[in-house]
Length: 109
Image (cartoon, rainbow, N blue to C red; front, side, top):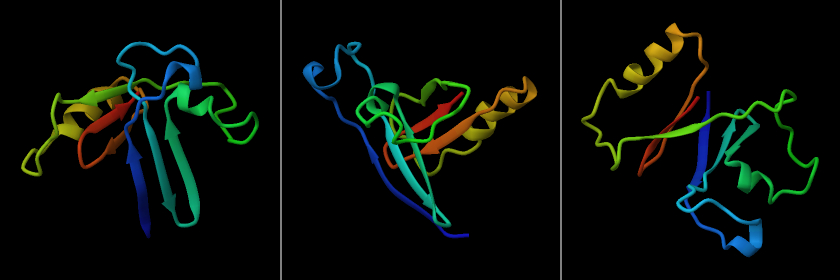
């Protein structure tokens, strides 16, 4: 299977563009192209920048919470971190989505 991850973007947008935002809110946008299928993962404020009905989203309106893993970038010598996070979530039957970037790791639960 071919996997292409195009980019990870961390940015702040002025209040006038998106509306009032919480101080320190992390903007998150991930674009993945896997075997011809596109997946977008983004925060709610970024999603609101797209025209209505442009994106296919969860029919249930389910929202996930993003948790940044660690306060600094994790090195390549770190191991078992995903297992430490995913095992208790799986035991509690809580779905999780893990995204690792060059700078930070994030778990969506």
